[in-house]
Amino acid sequence: MKFNVSRDALLKPLQLVAGVVEKRQTLPVLANVLMQLQGQELSLTGTDLEVEIVGRLPVDGVEMEGEVTVPARKLLDICRSLPDGAELKFERDGERLILRSGRSRFQLSTLPAADFPNQEEATAQTRFDISQREIRRLIEATSFAMAQQDVRYYLNGLLLECRPQQLRAVATDGHRLALCDRDAPGLNVSAPIQAIVPRKGVLELGRLLEDSDVPAQVVLGNNHIRVMSGQFTFTSKLVDGKFPDYDRVLPRGAGNVVYADRQGLRQAFSRAAILSNEKYRGVRLQVSEGMLQIVANNPEQEEAEEQMMVDYVGEPMEIGFNVSYLLDVTGAIHSDQIRISLADANSSALLQQPEEGDALYVIMPMRL
Image 1: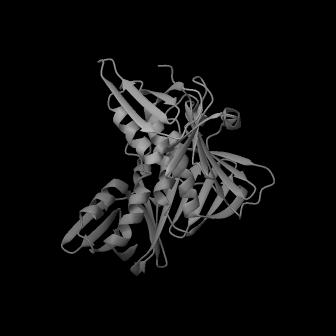
Image 2: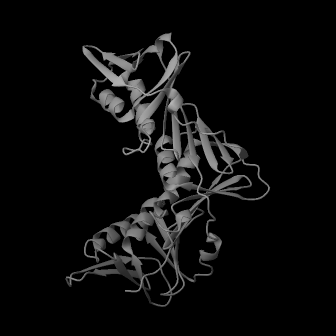
């Protein structure tokens, strides 16, 4: 194995692949990145047995093909520490991989490529093309609502629902729910197909995708999802569980509707949050005709009060929420205005764009 590559060309795919590699591994080879050289293309593979990422890049000066695994973190740290524009020369020497650049020389230990785990081929339930931008939007709009280390393991991930000509993402931690729909003309299914992508897979895929119209092919199997684009292949196991019936928690007929300036509301929530209870993060919303009052207090008897003009006509209402959830939603919606639909002080709130948007958010109230 012998080839040349520029430091800048190698760094980006290496960073993406090394992100999957866990620092503490039961199998030593899982701390390594698999380097495979075929023709003029080098592929880099990293996995933790749940998520696998393959990055590909062109190289030159190829004198000998081959494959080997080297410590991912050490190789990444070496590449980062070398100057921009540096030319790297790799050469396999027995059990070692020699890396030269200018007057620098590094000798890395290797493990056989045969020891590296191979992801089995996913049997496809459905296969479709969609732009990277569309999948990225789904993840950005919903992933913050995923649970973290919940005993209900099926909540520690993102539901992808393939519907006719449409891809839907849903995330919930039991206290809030985020839902986003994007058009997927290439998606031809007769009935909805559901798959739960684990939290780590969702976050890694979000890092891979670019905000561009570059197409990606999605292959959804019974227990795997694979996303393939020109420079990378992402594979993740799916969570084996049944996602709750999210349709049942979507508020129906919430008659009290508040329209507010989204950015102004977000800033008011941020200021009120400073004096909220650090553990429960509760704020009280008092809404009356044309006016919204936000009140937060904490055990030290400190209090924050914010007032802002809103578009609301109806009976005065008072309702409590976790301010962190409100900040997440006002950050995920991109329109100038935000629409908040309320039924009563004990019912969930529905937040969305005033005009036809692609996402909606549900937040359960708090007793304060």
